[in-house]
Length: 402
Image (cartoon, rainbow, N blue to C red; front, side, top):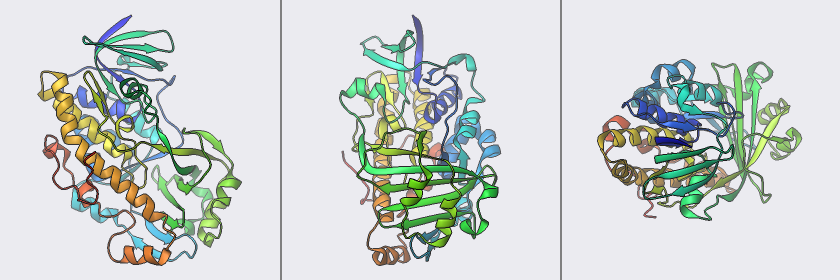
């Protein structure tokens, strides 16, 4: 049996960011990851300016700057007609907010987050099986037979969190009624006109939307889409999909999108799962972060961003408070109102992108609402200045008392 003061369950983006956040304050944590090696496949990660600031603040600024692809921002087109709807210039927004908007290959970002950490404190092949919560600590039981006694636990074990289930019982994520297709292509196989004029295009249409953009300094093209579906799809990053079925999900697509989809030879698929927006982020000696606390639909690219904000702010509170239980309580008080707002924004944007009434959608975009809604309050957040403040700028339309 092993013992530790702080255990982090999950060695993905949230868990490694949390380990770095604690490291910057001289706090050592043990990270337990289910996989046999670090790294996640099959997806890119979007990181808006406020989250890039959080990554800098946890001490991995040089690493993420070296691998981040500066996103020019998406040109949005109607999926059927190809009509231009809007362009979000992220280069201008980067100047306004003082930090770039990055797109990463997920595996590159995992490597960047792991690089400053002592690998002796990252325990691979440790899949959490069960948890015993006691007054004096938390017993963690892993499928490999290892048992760890931790004083405090940070749960970064994703949307199907074992820790969350231990705390709240039958609190399983539910199918959203949408499935996701993903493909990662070498840039040279993608006709340049498909992604003109800036290398980042979003198509929106009834019941579906698709985004394609360059990553790894224009060497790869990431394609991700969400499609309304009555079919229950398994949740997971790397479930093999059928490219012909992916193409069939986009009937009547405009020529550039048809040409882009024709280049896809391999793809993955999964069902999109989430939970109702709640305050169930942990209690006592267990604090949940990232998807384990607040899984959200990816329609405004804030899932990983909220995890990075979580990590930095939790580290600040644990440095300030002698008692981690007090730190956890303060963390939840400042984070829950903001993240609830982002979850509601994501749900709203998701519905907007899939509107059946395309003329109404176009009028809304031209009125200034855009496919992502009003997002300045999200990107304009200053983690280093406002980490200890309850947010007051969440728009009323997105506030959730939960």
